[in-house]
Image 1 (cartoon, rainbow, N blue to C red):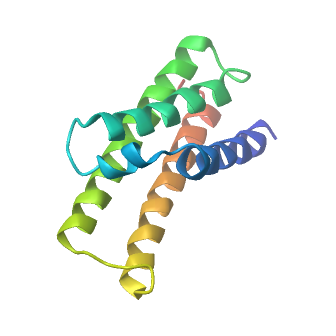
Image 2 (cartoon, rainbow, N blue to C red):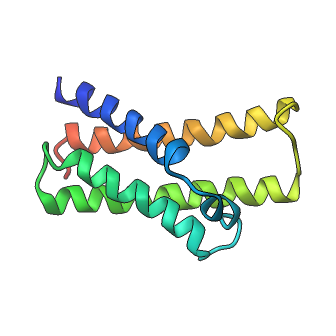
Length: 123
C-alpha cells in the first residue's frame, strides 16, 4: 500500500516540477553540461523527491533517493536536449512526440526504480 501511495506522490511531484515550476532559464540551458538551468531544474526534482520519501524512510535515505533522482533526471534531460538541438523538431511532428514520450517514460522508470529500492528495503 505504501508503494502505491508513494508512486502516486512521485508522479504528481513530477508534473509539478516538470510543468508547473520549470522556468525558461531552466529549459534553455539543459543541453549544456553543467549549466545552471539544468542543475536548478534537476535540483528541484531531487529536493521534491527527497521530501516525498521522508514520511517513509530515514532522512538520510530520503536524501540519497533525492540525489539519485537529481543525477538521473539531469542526465535524461541533458541527452534529450542535446538530441533535440541536433535534430530540431516541432510539436506538430510525430518525432517530437516520440522524443518527448521517451523522455517522460525514462523519468517514470526512474520512479519505478526508486520505489523498487524502497520496497526491497535497500534504502
